[in-house]
Each structure stands twice: as C-alpha cells, then as structure tokens.
Length: 155
Image (tube, rainbow, N blue to C red; front, top):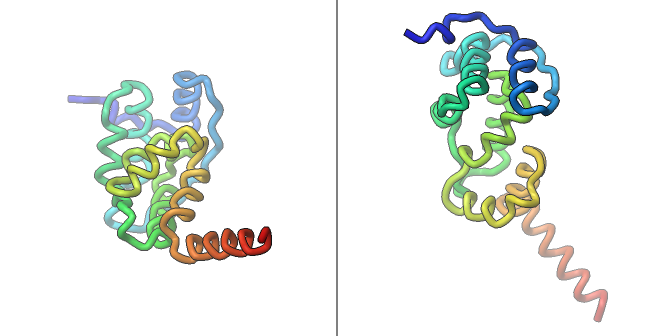
C-alpha cells in the first residue's frame, strides 16, 4: 500500500519539495477551507500534488483530468475561466502547477489555438488572455472594431 497518501504534508513542505525539484520559487498559498462536496479536502490535495512532485508520475495529470472540465471553445469562456480559477483556489493549486496544467485543461479548437501560441505563453495569465482574445465574443468584436477603425484612419 502507498504510504505517501497517508502522510500529512504541510503546504510549506510541499512547496519546499517543489522548489528543490524544479529550482524555481513558488508563491505562498493560503489555507482555504473546502466547501464543495465534489472537491477533495485540502490535505489530500496537497498530498496528491506532493506525490506528483516527488514521483514525477502521472498522478498530477490524473488529478487535473478528474477534477476539471476541459475547455473546447464551445463553452462560455468567461464562465469557464471563472470556474477554473475558483477551483484552483479551492484546491490550493500553486501558480506553477496551474501553468503546467494548461495542456490538460483544453481540447478541440482551444487546443489548436494553444499549440499555435504556446511559445508566447509564459504564465496562466497569458493563457487566460489568449482564451479571451480568441473565444470571448465581446473581446473579439472589440478587436475587430479597433482594427477597422485603424484601417479607416490610415486611409
């Protein structure tokens, strides 16, 4: 039986382990209480994240796939981004891991747009912006209007 799931790692220990394995710094997280039955308790989440960092296995991938709904481009992008960010916060997922989760959070047209732009995405916020630019009807319409005005003003 895997005893790593029974260990009670603190968030600080998890972050230290993550830093030592990736030679990067991570932001400190606050302990938020979970309040949804569909979400795992915070301590179990920290153990899963810690296990992924230690083993470099696929448990983090499985965790993201099981707990998040992928974005395909068909859903309301603002609602999906809001729900995803809220779930990241509830599950106390550090920013570095949010960034690492991006390829697991998308499918279909969104995946194609991500693949074509992935070299320009340096953070989850960059990814957020990319989705808004391509899938938020208000942002797309505003961008088209701005481009049209620019063309007409140059004439």
